[in-house]
Each structure stands twice: as C-alpha cells, then as structure tokens.
Length: 153
Length: 153
DNA sequence: TTCAGTGCAAAAACTTTGCAGGAGG
DNA sequence: CCTCCTGCAAAGTTTTTGCACTGAA
Image (cartoon, rainbow over all chains, first blue to last red; front, side, top):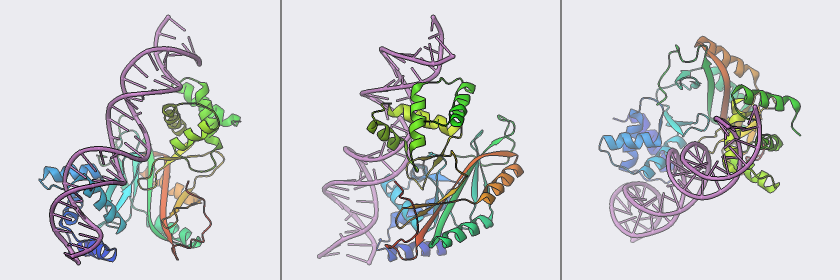
C-alpha cells in the first residue's frame, strides 16, 4: 500500500513532465517502498519477479530514474559498486559509513552537513538539490568487526 | 617527472604488499599525475596512447586500483556515472558540487566535515580511511549558468 | 486518435578475467 | 627459477536502446 502523500508526489511529478500515469510505475513504486535497505535495480526486478509481479528490467531502470528525479529515492555509489537506491520516505537525510573490512554499512545523521552544503551552494549562485556522502572506515581489529551495522546486501 | 615523495609512497606500498615494481606502473602513475582534473580509466588509457605510451587497458585499470589503495588517488562516482579518479597530491581534501544544469563541477574545501566524520567513525569503533561527498545543485536561471566551474570532462 | 510507455532482445558501456609469454626479485 | 605482471581478447556485469505493440489521455 503506497502512502497517499508519496503517490501524490509521484503523480504530480509525472503530470508536470508530460509522463503518463501507468500501472507499471505504481507497481515499481510500491515494490521499491517495500525494500528495507539499499537496493539496486536488478534486486528490485528480481524481488518483484519473485512476487509474480512482471515488469521488464528496462521499465524498472527507467522508473527508478523517475523516482530519483522527483526525490522519492536517492542514488548512492560506493566506489565503483553498482548504483544503489534508497527510499527517502520518513527518513532524515543521512550519510553512510562502509566498513572496508566487512562491507557492512552504518548510517548516521548530521544535519549540520546539509546546512554547510546549502551555504556553499548559495555562495556559488546555486541551489542545492541533493547530496550524498560515503565514508570508508575499518575496524580496529580486522576479522572481528564488532560495530553495529547492516548487511550491505 | 614523478615527485620523489609520491614515487616512494607507491614503491613502499607495492613492496609491503608483495607487488612488483614494474615500468608500466610508473608510466601510469606519471600519466595520472599529469591529468589536470577528474578522469576515468579509459580517458587515461587514451591519453597515454596519444602520447605513444602503450600499456593495456587492463593494466591501467589494475594500476589505478593500486594507486587508490595507497591513497595516491581518490575514486568518485556522480550518481551512476562511471568511476572517476583524482590525484590527491598537493591538495587538501575537498568536495564536489555538480551543477545538474550544465554538468560542471565546483570544488570546495571544508575541513570541519572531515572532523565530523572521524568523530562519528570513532564513536562506532571504526577508523576513518577515506570519504567522498557529492552535492548536486542547479543554477537559478537554467541555461545561463554563471557560476565559476570546471568542465566535467 | 495519438504518442508515450512497455517488453523483449540486442547493443552499448564499463570492467574483469584467463591465458601465454615475459620480466622482476 | 619461480612467480607475478602484462597484453590481448574474450567474457562478465550493468545499463541503455530500438522497435513493434499497447494503452493512457
């Protein structure tokens, strides 16, 4: 079930940009919101297939891009890894630390960073639209990671 | 001409990790240091070819990875674009704003962000190794970007 | 009715790998 | 002399595209 507010955000964006309202787009939005953590296009496609929701890979890629454009999703890249997505809904802006030892990801919030970025953009006659930060770190004792983190995949 | 200090950093890293000291690796290091801005593996490969320095693409990819590991280079990704590299030599850590209107890139320094990240890592029993941030912004009047920026490519 | 969206497969773009020959330690 | 490195081509991975058909407006 897609929250009304998000659905409206999506519909508004589609209409404003002369995109059509299609059932596939809502199926993909719904499935993306169900993904608990970061995911990539192919994972979402397979997840949907698993649930007998058949849309093509091409449509998944295109729709994720639309959802990124209207700020329902953020894209992340961790140094050359495939592009991963994350829904923004109900979440404050946050950053990612990847443990280079165990590949797990820790998230943290730090509102001041957003303020800094907005300020710098303004000083350059720009309006900030989005920002992402990836921090890479390692455990003190490799092989025995004790930090509290999510699985990457 | 590769600065002695960088050369030594590279050699030390190679030796410590049982990698061999080869001529190709120095050719690629040299060429990478000559690149003025961000570049990707293929651009570097073609640039070298242009200068009649023949090494294979595979070797370029592998060597860039080594140079990243020993902190001579940083990797960046701008939302799904290909992996781009940047030499760290003689530069403070800095961040990137990409104008989504004209695709140009502005760099800025802000040492406090690094401090914040180190602090957060420490709080999670981690040691920060690296970090990258990409800010996306747009001009006030699209089509007439007046900010002072570098070409992306 | 019209034109954007879809699915499919094929292509493109980027990166890694296997292997045979060559060179560093 | 034993490995690791290199170059090449081939394969792998991820993403985009062309095209005929379908369906939203």
